[in-house]
Image (cartoon, rainbow, N blue to C red; front, side, top):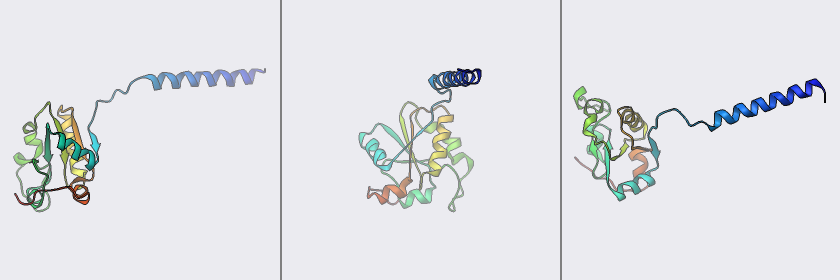
Length: 147
């Protein structure tokens, strides 16, 4: 074996050791929320013992919502004119800690933002319903219409 081959072998082993060291350490990032499908969300709702949070506007909520949902809008939109004290940022303490929190909106975008907001505020068992109420209704699951 020549000197160049020994150098390549040594570099290979150093690289292998570095990969093993870095892949064996746990992630340092804090836990976040989990996005679940509407099927998984329905299962969670059927099991109970969760807080169901709708972060859409009052008009969207009145049009249709999931039974048992509590409306705390994330933001103004779609013609709503809510004061800052009526939005999730100001009302976050109304969401109980120590319970699973399932968050939904129309498509899953606002609920993802709200889910991260909850995690940042110290909530640990937060689930975002991917696809929102649009996907829920497309799957044929029931909704409540009216206020």
